[in-house]
Image (cartoon, rainbow over all chains, first blue to last red; front, top):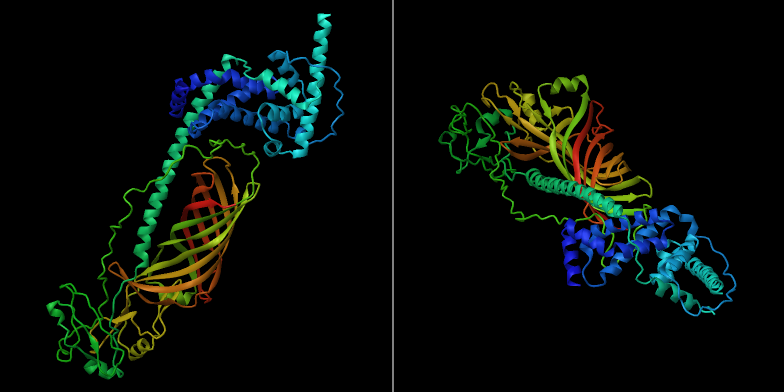
Length: 183
Length: 441
């Protein structure tokens, strides 16, 4: 922790070597965050680069009171949302009725690999993926999502419900594939 | 059964916690290059800000300096030289030198009082005159020896103290970034869409004023001996700006502005003429130039004029003060439109519009040896005129809500300031509008 603080302080003094150390420490985690939101690797790399530029530009404002990783993660998520909104502003504003819960398969445990989970999330339609990631993985409230993404709270809730249904179906299908493979 | 929503949430939240994907090495290389570029921009930014701050400080100091220099009138009590009621008497007994008078030959300060018949006597402080000049004082007993009569023009006895005790260190707080995108409690990034905002600010305007003028042949003939030149002035006030969602913004406000001119070569010698003497008494002698006729204030004698010659003897002549400054002070209500031609630092915009100008002061001053004394006003000045302005502005953001602004602006009066059809006097001025603007909404 002390080492991280020293790196942060050196970054606040704009030292290039410290910037590289900080990047090395957080790049992999943050790239995974970007991959969760972006449609492909190239877009995720662009977001990662832009997010780190914001981190280094604004690192003076970090006051060592909270988790640095959380602070960086928020910047990444906001960068991704910003890019997402610029590219697909229309995809967040439509609303559909929530489908009936048609799940009919048991999940004994969540024995899925990172890659399997990541693939399932990436297969979500963008409007569902964004709300699901923000609500479930980042811990935003519907009010915060509404404000950040410029959608209504109702849209946020309905998108989350449909994302859950979508993922639930994906999980069940994956489990079914696994069972068939075992048999 | 995955019947509960929380279960599917937990599957992904737990499953993806700590998940890492190593980015390709070229991402860091691109990032490094972006940071280097940003560093270069940052240096440029710091240089611009420092330059702007230095300009603003210099502007303020110059403005304060000018303000104290132009707004402090000379305090002099001057004896108004009153000729005797009868021209014939004026030469022999119109004036009495009181006890305080010292003969000019001794070059001592003197006081002149008027005779008992004139109740308008005032005290006078007369400057010590140079030895070379023939400063003869009219005295009953020395009438035959006096070769000239002269009202002694005042000279300022107030030394302007330019050693303003300004704050020893005028520090400009310089922020590293224009807009704090990420506070410690991280806030959502702003959208790129421009919002409608309202900003208010104070401006200080040092300006140079000149004019475009023409006048009737008669006026030209009367004023052809004078030399006219522009003046410097200091204005300022409050401005309100409405920034629309587009590149356009609109401004209004309340500003104080001064225009005018300096006129040299007013001194005129004329042969003694009784009618002239009477004319002087009745304040009908005027100093004429392209702006209009300078007339003494109401209830005031001709302090514009003084006798300069052998007095009552044979050919008394009259002359006016040599240098005169005419000023017109206006309260200006501008209606300006502004178009932003550069929406990023250094935020350059062009502006143009019309202003309503309400006359609040009209004055003429005699300028003598660096001091000035109010002697009257310019006649026939319109109480309201319109002016047009164009400018190029540069804004330097100090924070999200505070901006330094600097705008060279050219202002031209559409209407002649004179209501007299013999005079066409259109002032124009080139000023630098500098100040601070706050975004209030």
